[in-house]
Amino acid sequence: MTRIGRVLFCAALFVPTTAYPQSQPSGIAPSAAGKSLSVSSTSSCVAMTQQNTTFVIWNVGSVAAYFNMNGATATTGNPQLPSGGAITVNAAPGATLCAITASSTTTLQITQGLGFPAIAISPAGAPMQQTGGTVGLVAGSANIGNVGGTSNVTPTDCSGTITAGGTAQNAHAASSTLRGAILKNIDTSEVLWFSITGTAAAGALGSYPLAPGAATTFAGAESFATPLGLGYNTALSVVAATTAHKFSCTRW
Image (tube, rainbow, N blue to C red; front, side):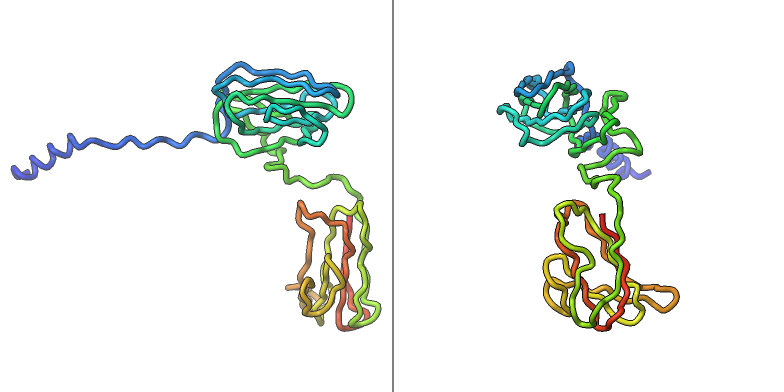
């Protein structure tokens, strides 16, 4: 090694390094004793420990609770935490949890600490589990972000054919009890148009086309399924150019 090389090598040994912060793991690291809140049809509250900003609340009783984290009196208009359910939330340091039931009593158990969890709700009957200082949802059974739809709703067939080509008809009527529907174009010759906000019409605003599939295989046939969260209580209007155009439909 040359003299210049030795100088550069030695200088490199003394170059200060910058310490970069490590990203914190998702979840919550408990940093204070847990809290408990007895909940009845009259609003009750419990204050969290001052330094904590992340809270896991689970309902260990047999009736739903309604809660808020702003210290105000809870009402049944607040978010609901079902029996056996749990939620992870972030709130201001030392927040006050208030809760109420519509009737009867239940108990909320709270783990408090620090962390950066996404808001997550566990399904009823599967409370949060704590292992190694972090709290997470039960593996394989959790709904993240409360996106689960209504379960065990009996499906009803609404399939049919176009009664008069070019004239819209309803595959099913509007109903306040509707939760969703699936519609598929099973004709192999032409587009099926549909609308959930008015009367379907070919090429019109608010109407959507479903392409036909190939003969025999039905490859490329398009379908529509209502997404979770959609307030679906309207009629499903359909139209095609030809009488007897077939479509498959299931509602629930």
